[in-house]
Image (cartoon, rainbow, N blue to C red; front, side):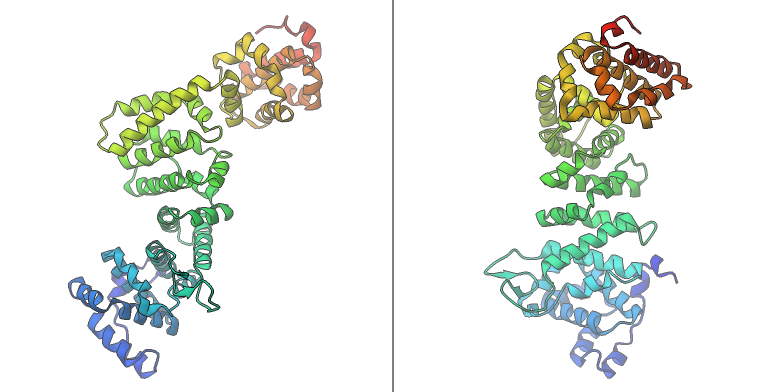
Length: 452
């Protein structure tokens, strides 16, 4: 059977030769007794055994994973642990019992992450996520995994565990081992792990943020809705960490989140996206992006719907108030700048408003004429005819209103780049590229005579 398609149920139907392992001294007689009591028993019988002597069973499982390399047995023990934790996630605390303080509870699973077998990788990843979430807080100079903070023991440190796990999760998002399961599994685990500040740091350092962005898109099937929810949950968790927010500001995360919230009827998805908006509103240029993308109107429409989640209703109210305050503060040039930087060029009124150009022309000098450089990138690369026409028109307006417009635009080698559009298939693009070239040749003195 293809091990990538193995299920826990199939694996747990196996009969593992525990007696043979004891006779070859791979497990002890005590281990065998415990396994006989536990193996192939229903949860109603296993539960009391774990309540009575859970750490002993954990020790048995860890010893088997360390001592036995046979794939079928490793899969079986991982399935036993996964089933144990799925039935009651609080059982992860058994791994931190004082009687296991000398055991390296992380190493077997971390090592198995590097195996080529997807079943083994998935179970190890999920188990590690459970263990990390359940680990006790730092107390009395002791760190989880039984390692004293001043110890020279060889136990795997929590730093190594977290880094190894985050690196593996990022590798699954980049190059999935399993075509259907890798990305949902990685996202599911990250939605839990990113609750920890240190994991957020490691995830940003591993360049993981950009791997989530393509996963943010409207979903229809139950499976894709869950993936979308957990991806957006990751974004919300990252919105509490400034370094992640700085990176998000360089991506198209905001348009994608807006598309999701416009098209989703699933309350939990809408809630986590709206809460992300609320967090990002006060950070960087996100407020201007939200306003440019029409979020104030979208929030009004969302408020009119019958949501039962109080957290969502509170977040919508706070977001509405915050957007109104930002709308008052946002200058016309801020809005224009966001429009250009996001590549959302359309014929909004400011483009043809003489007052806008007169009042803001010196703002175009910011960051070594950054806005003009972006307009030139649009002219060079965009396939959107409206964006091309508006970019050419705005460049012509700069030529008209800036005293050194021709020199600046010539410096950007704009003439040949714009002239290429004079033979464009679209009439609006041809007209505005012609206007731009005419103003480039005539200069500001005569440019005002050319109107469209």
